[in-house]
Image (cartoon, rainbow over all chains, first blue to last red):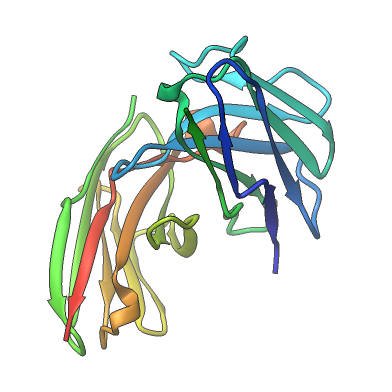
Length: 116
Length: 113
């Protein structure tokens, strides 16, 4: 079946540094990928839609200059958290729609970010 | 906008049946999804409903009533491994172009021996 991978699965960094998270679709092409954030005991909140070959679409309240998204190819999207702060500590999950009806989204395994 | 409500927590006994309800309000409905999420892991797809009625998949069934803005996930023959959060998610016609989902807050199910 369709598989989405994320790397790294865990990252601990110092405040002020930047962190890059990769999301790959392994056996299908994804012109669109979604980035979600999940705080403890809360649900997934959509941050942005990553579009291959064009600019990402950000949800209201999400700073595009802080969360840089690049969809370089049909199988790779990256999220860079710039100048990370402790409040950015969260579980970041990407997903990609398969384009197969009924269309489902397959989620990556997630990246847990801890900013000290 | 969209509003999705589901109970925060539920407890059930191994071998029993549990029903997790979800109500939603959306500007243009285009599908309802149920996902299972174990602690610290990404969600995994369980079911999809776009028309009224019941969809059955083994021990899991999902029901949808579009007129009532209501869905439920039914889990039969509960097993300890079913202890997880169950997320109800809705896609609206306004989102069709980008196909993102709006998630409810999730229901944490605890299965007891």
